Image (cartoon, rainbow, N blue to C red; front, side, top):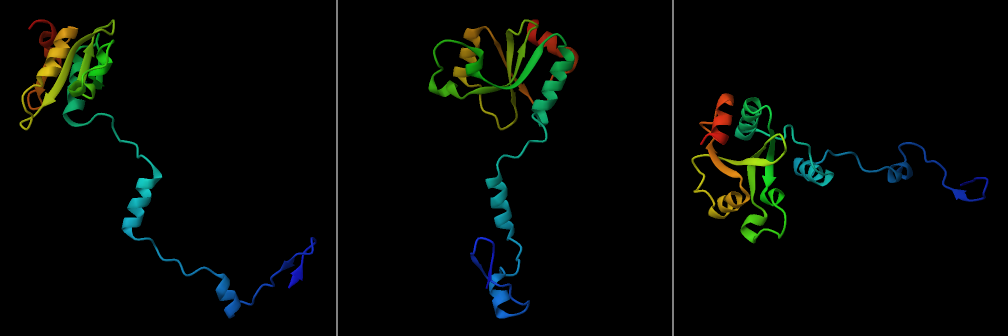
Length: 158
């Protein structure tokens, strides 16, 4: 044992390879199992998405943005954001639409849901709520989205 300046006893270093030296060392490193790595990634927090929009929603957004240059387009909008006043009833409180198209004054003009073969009928409560707000509700097929020059006609001439 040796003493430092404060007269505390410190252990003497052991010679390498002696049992005393081996007892101080941690066990040899073993790599973690893949499940442990996956669990650590989940515990590490959220992972950033590569793109906010993807697939059909991205295509619809881009064609609408190209065809309606004087409009503003928002994606993944909850119905509660389109109205003020009393909270929405339970079936609509968490409902959303894929795209909302607003005019230059940022007034909502249309709400759009993209549908595919697996989609059911239009939710009556959602379409009724949007109708009461004066917002046109469109359900567009992902297989036949409007071309950029067709968006204005779709929103205002029908």
